[in-house]
Image 1 (cartoon, rainbow, N blue to C red):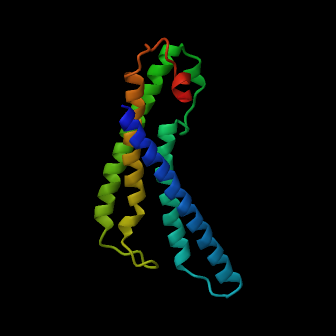
Image 2: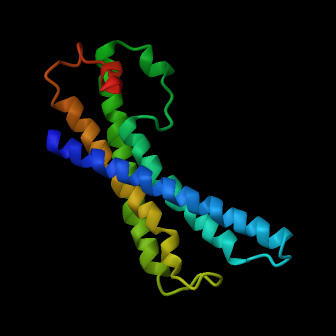
Image 3: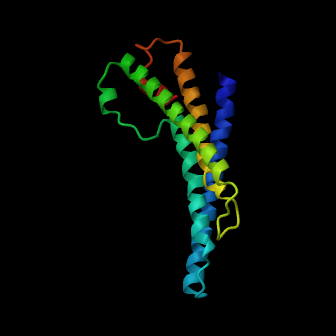
Length: 171
């Protein structure tokens, strides 16, 4: 389990690093767009489409990191009002649902990549499939991170009564 978690630590850090680089690229594109529009009076039309791809490349994999770090969107009020043991089982159920969601997102996005691969994005000249690749990557990462969270809870030496969700958040 430790080796699996270490590998996912590296993958998570790499994901965030690549997203950071894409964010810098997005910032540069927006700067070029403003410069081209207002200084050169010649708007680079390709930037809007490239920016959309950059946003997808940032958002989808980082959302998967949210599953691992458990900072994804969740409503904790009801869960935290339950006994500690129930909180743990509900958290595990949520991780399982997130994993299934990620699996569906990866599989069906991969189908979209295949369906639109022959079409080109007009302003960029690349395959339309690149629009959906971040969804495939994000979904696959969600599955891995959800499996890790489930394994951490299942392999815990403490029972559900002693090991609450709060302890899992602090690890």
